[in-house]
Image: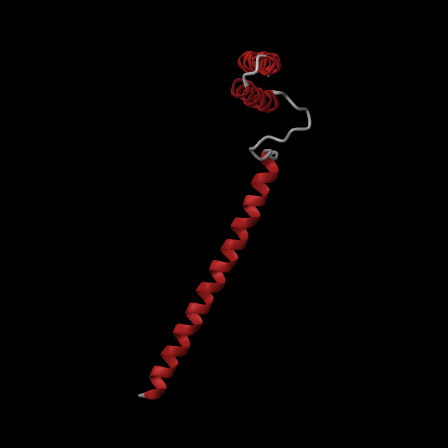
Length: 108
């Protein structure tokens, strides 16, 4: 974790603790809306702490990169498969053109 996310994590934790302390104080003063605001802000802070906290088993949003050689091998196999299919299409078109040409000659 770099310095910037650590600072944000500390700030989010302090924000959460301040609101955690403020909620019962506002409730004790009889200010229900004020206490509810502290609870809502405390939940927001807890969410931020959860999002910013490092996790060892956490998977990143980006897929893990495979070694380059494996990726290149799969790419080569895909390209070979495409080349075979293109060749089959070409052969089918040549055969079709040949059959149509023969039909055209016999119909005349």
